[in-house]
Length: 355
Image (cartoon, rainbow, N blue to C red; front, side, top):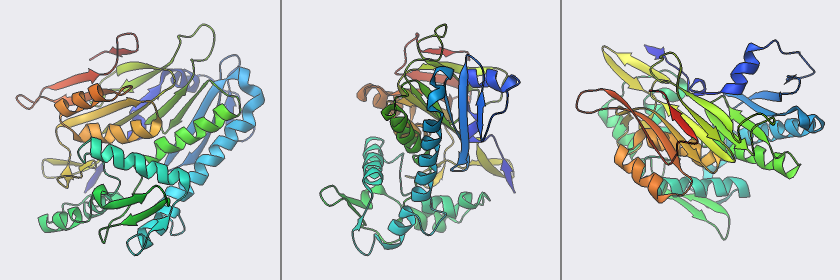
C-alpha cells in the first residue's frame, strides 16, 4: 500500500506568509486577501498546487497585474501538462519521434535549459524520466515495486541525450522511440519566472511568488521600510522536528526544495520514495531533502531534484562552478546513519541553520 508522506509544497514556508495566515484577514473580491500596511496576496490553483503572489500594499493599483500573471500561469499549465491530450507537450510526445516538431519559443528555451542541466549534473536531472515514474506507479500516486526487467525497459526509454533541439529551426525531435517529455520537475519554476517577468514589465519590482511553497521567486527587496533587504523564507525540517531547519534571505533570487518523504510507499520495512535517480532507475536513498538557490526559479526547481540525487561532493563541485547557485542538503552519514545538514554557496548574512 502506498503511504502518503509530507508533500513537496509543505517543505518551504515564507515566514511573513505564516504571520498573515495567523491573522484575521478581511475578505475581498475573488481570491485576493489584503492586510493593511503589509501585503496583498493573490492566488489561484494550478499545476496541482496553489500559486500565490505577494506584494506590498503600496502596489494596490496593480492588483489586475497580479491576476494577469496568474492567468499566464494557468496558460502555461495548459501548454506543459502531460495530462491533457491537447497540450503542446502531449503533441511533442506523440509526434516528435516521427519528425521535427516546432515548439513555442519559451518552451523551446525551457527544453534547452533542461538539457543543459542534464549535462551539467551528469544526468541527475532528466526531462525524459517519465517512463520510470510510470513503472514505479508514481504517475498514478500508487507506488508499486516493479520487476527489474521492467525498470531496465523503462531506463532504455530515458535520456535527454536522445532529445534533439534545433535552435535555428526551433524544432524538437526524439532520437529514441518511447522517449517522453515531462516537465514536472521544472515547470512550476518556469511558470514563476514568466509571471515574475510580467510583473516587472508592468512596473511591479517587489514581489514574492511561490508555487505551493516548494518553489519561490523573490523580486527586489522585502516589503516595508522596517523589513530586512530581502524576503525571509524558512525551510522546514524534513524530519518533522519543531522549528525550521534553516532560514534564507532572498533578493532577486529563487529557491526550490525537494525531499524523499513527499510521496512514498512501503513494502515490509522498506521505504520507497518517489524521487528516482534517472541513471539507475531506482528511488533515492542517500539524501533526505535538498534545497537549491539559483538566479531563476526554473533552475532552482530542476536543481533541487538533481541535488537530491547527487553525491555531496558533486553538489559542492557544481556550486563552485556555477555563479549564483547555492544548496542546503540534509543527508545521512553512510557510516552511522546520522543526519547531517550541509550547505554551500551561501554566506552567513543570508543563511541561518538551526540544526
